[in-house]
Structure formats: C-alpha cells, structure tokens
Length: 287
Ligand code: PDD
Image 1 (cartoon, rainbow, N blue to C red):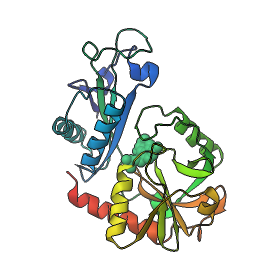
Image 2 (cartoon, helix red, strand yellow; image 1 turned 30 degrees about the vertical axis):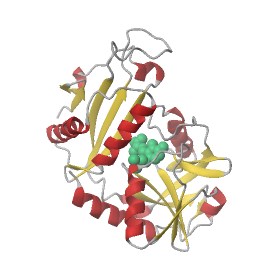
Image 3 (tube, protein in one colour; image 1 turned 135 degrees about the vertical axis):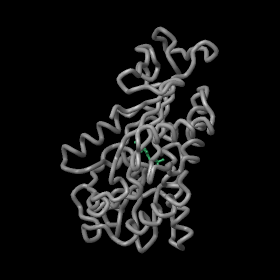
C-alpha cells in the first residue's frame, strides 16, 4: 500500500509529494516538528503536542498555517487513510520557500510556511521487546545550541550521537553539559534512587517532553516521589534504575550506562510500572 502523506493542504501518494529546493527547512534547518504516537488507531497526548508546536513556532516568529482543530483532522485522516493501528505521526512546519537563498527571514505575507505530515507504521510499538530487556546508553558531550526547548529540525548532532552509541555497541547517548546530564538524543533522561524519580528541571537546556509531563503527573498521582534537579553521569551509574521517556519509546528502562550495569542489569520496578501506567492512562484518553 502506498503511503498517503499531507503537503500544504493536499493528501498525496508519497511519491507525488514535493517541496521546493529553496525551502528554508532544507537549506537552513529553519523549521519545527512534532512526533505524536498512535495506539489502537488513536492519538496519544495530541493536545500537548499541539500546544508545544504553537510555542515552538511563536519562539521563532513563525506563522502557524493551521489551528488545533484542523491539525487534529489531518492527523486523524492520515491515520485512517494509512490504516495505522500502532505507529507515529510526524509533522513539520518550516518558514517556507522564498524562491532563493537568503539568511534574512522572508516576509510571511509573501512566503507561506510549508507544512508536511506523514505516518510511520510501527506494529508492536507498545509491546516492545526492548522495554522488557532495557537499553544501553553511552554519555557524550552536549554541544547543541542553547534553545533546546524549541523543537527544531536541527537534528544533526543528535543523529551523530546515535551513531556514536551504535559504534560503541549501545542503543543511545545521554548528553552532558557542565558535568550534568541534559537529556538523551531524542528523549528525556531519568534516574531512580531510593524510590525517588530524579530528572532535570525544565529550562532552555532541554526539550519539554510531552511524555515527561504526563509521566511525572502519573508518578505523583501514584504517590511516587519526584525530584526535578540535575544529576551527574556518576550519580546515574550508581542509581538503582534509569530510564528515558519520549513519544516514540513511551517509558524505556536503561540498564547500562558507559558500560556500567545499573541495578541488576535488568529493568527494575519503577520504570516498568511507569510504562504500564502511562500506556494504560494514555490509551483511556487517546483521541
Ligand atoms: N523526540 N528530548 C529530545 C531532544 C527529543 O527529541 C524528544 C522527542 C524528547 C521527548 O519529548 P516527547 O516526550 O514530547 O516526545 C526529549 C522525538 C520523539 C523524535 O525526535 O523522534
């Protein structure tokens, strides 16, 4: 089945979808994105992703070519047309194609933003074998720019981080700045010590994860203790448990950091429980 994608108002077979070579997303990484997961054919945390998209656009003085209702309709239409039961919807908005290359932002009156959405079919996303086994991470220096709270498409360094991890026989990398862990290449990072869940506080240093917000809310509702503060990689290596959260991995245990086994080297109690709560509760309110 050919995938149907969405480009600037049209639903098209993927091979017919086109964007200009002058698009600022292509030339300058001048664009923002969102990834929303789909479980049981329904969207998880859609509202949170829509609100963060609005914020990313406004922080970059970019015009939003849609609104929440229209976005929801496009997401649902793509999920339905592509028969997605479990998977992801990728959305990208760029500052558009002014017809030439120039560092100066084009006038939004004459250059419309580009909006693209497509689905990724991922059967078995919720019942992932990786979640039962846990993942291995390495630590790398965080050399990204200073506005990581904006979800831009500048993903070269995170891609390089994943490649460094792969080369080292690991699954992902946690990034470190001034001695403290910021986040994973495409996820938020957590440790558990004495039943306390510890994760870096929100600032411009990290992406304000939509899954993070939901997981911390569920953890507090379940009377688990949450501490929002920075931690070092040494503290992480000595933790009882470690895990990550993101829209594509939900809650995923980490069982090895820089070759040091965490806890017993298998997922502990807290991360799998949070994964279960997150999946159960999110499914209930999926739209
Ligand atoms: N990544 N931190 C970074 C740097 C991310 O790229 C992501 C998401 C997160 C988690 O955010 P959320 O819970 O809202 O997905 C944290 C997406 C999944 C991606 O790039 O594919």
